[in-house]
Structure formats: structure tokens, C-alpha cells
Amino acid sequence: MPLDWKSLFSGKGRVDRTTFWTVQLLTGVFAACLKATATLFPSELMLLLLAPFFVANWVVSVFSLTKRLHDLGRSGWWMLLPLAVALLVVAAAAAEFGRGSTGALLSEDVVLWGLLLFLLAVGVLKGSPQPNRYGDPPKAMRSATA
Image 1: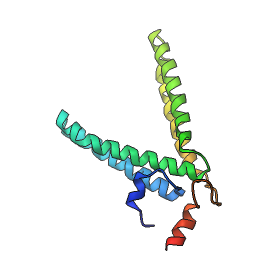
Image 2: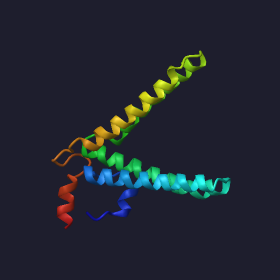
Image 3: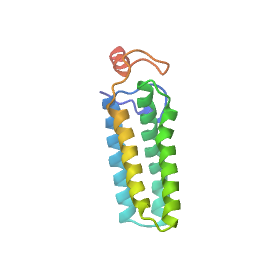
Image 4: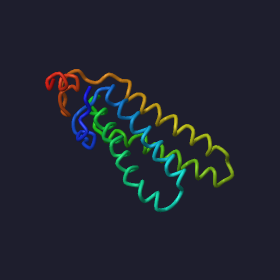
């Protein structure tokens, strides 16, 4: 499966599960390497030098998620739903924490698990085998170009 590097920076089209998980794995490893570099060489200059790479890595990950949602027949805007819920939970937890409650720590875990479940669902569910408004199925496009 050759990877089209230009398509990594585009939110158009669809990707299958294998491509999605490959991109997520690579961006995760790259992010870990960037974080390790920033930790080993802690300075403002290093953070400034690494910032464009962090941003580019995040953009590639978001576009991959967008295209995966497209394969499921959903708009990329659906990724905002779990983030909106997470923000509401964090805001509620912060309000509780201000009143001396320790529930804020638990709500942080709930948010992380919720986001992980969303990512897993998007990555595990089978995409639509028919063309949809976002394009042809990824495997059909790959076999057509081969």
C-alpha cells in the first residue's frame, strides 16, 4: 500500500481502516519522538523549533480522522462532538474542583476514555462499500490506480 504523502495534508476523500491506523500509529510515534526531544533539550528555542512539526503532525492526524469519518459517510465535523462533550465535562469538573470535590480527577479519566472509545469506533467500524458524497471507497480507488 503506497502512501500518497500529499494526501496526508488534505481532508478530501476517504481512507480505509488500515490506512487510518497506519497514519495514527506513525503520527503517534512521531509525536512521542518530538516530545522526547523537547524533554531532552528543554529550552524555549527547542520548543520554537519543534512547534511547526507538532502542528504538522496534528494536522495530518486530524485529516486522517476526517477522511475516516468520510468513509463512514459522516462529515469530518463529527469529530467535534466528543471534543465538545469533553469540554463540558472538564468545565463541570473544574467547577466541582473549585468547591473542594475530588470528582474532577475522575471526570478527566472519563473524558480520556470517551475520546479513546470514539477513536476506536471510528477506526474499527467498516466503511461504506458504495461511493458516497465524499468519494469512491478507498479500496476501489486503490485498485483503479494499480
